Image (tube, rainbow, N blue to C red; front, side, top):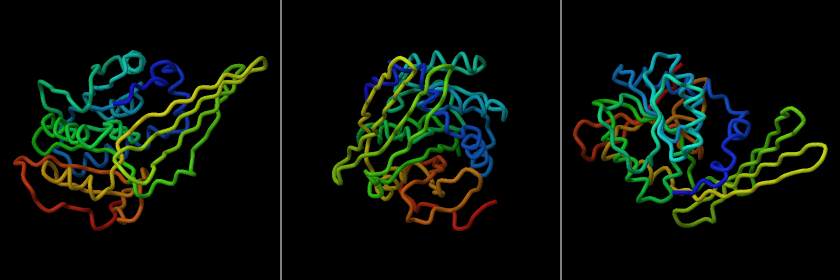
Length: 263
C-alpha cells in the first residue's frame, strides 16, 4: 500500500483538491445501482472513504453508513462531516466485520490503492466476506491498457488570499502490475508560492484480468463511467463502473453484463 505521504501531510487540503468532483452525482448513481441490483438492505460501508463526502450524501438516502480508511487525519475530518456515521482506521485489503453490510462502495478509483494483484485479490475476498447475501460491491476502475501518460487533470480554487492549483495524472510504463498516480499541489499568494508533489504506487490491471478475479465471488455487471445515466459498458472504454453482486456459493460461473441501457 502507498504510504499516502501527501494525503497525510495535507489532509486539510484534500477537499480543495477534489473540489471539481461531483460527489452528489456519484453517490446518487451508486444508490440507483444498489436499488436495481441490491438486496434492499441499508447497511453501507465506504472503503477508502477519505473525508466522507460520499457518505454524507448516502446518509441522506437512508443508509446506515460506515467508512474505512488507512489515514487517520482523513477519518478525523470525515467524523466532523458525518458525526452520525461510524469510521474505522484499517486496510481495505485486510479487514473483518462483526455484522455484514448490504452495500460496499469504493469511489475515485481507490480500489487501485490495493497496490498489487495479490493485495487486490485479498481486498476482493475481504469485501465478499463482509457482504450479506446478494449484497453489492460498487467501484470504478481504469484499464491499464488504456492509460495515456500524456493526459492530466488540473483545476484551481481561490481560498481567501491564496490560489490552490491541483494536478493529477496516471502513468503506466506499458508492462507489469504497477501504475502511478501523480499528484501536485501549488499554493500561491502575494508573497510566495509553495509546491508539493507526490506519487502513489497503485495496482495496474486490465479489465479482463479484473473480471477474472471477481468471477469466483460475484456476478458482475459493468457500466460506462457515467453518473447521470446507467449505460452498459461498450467493452472498449478504459474507465468503467463495476457492480458486483455477491454469490452465495463461491464458484466459477458466467459473468453477467447489462445488455441495454437503463434510464
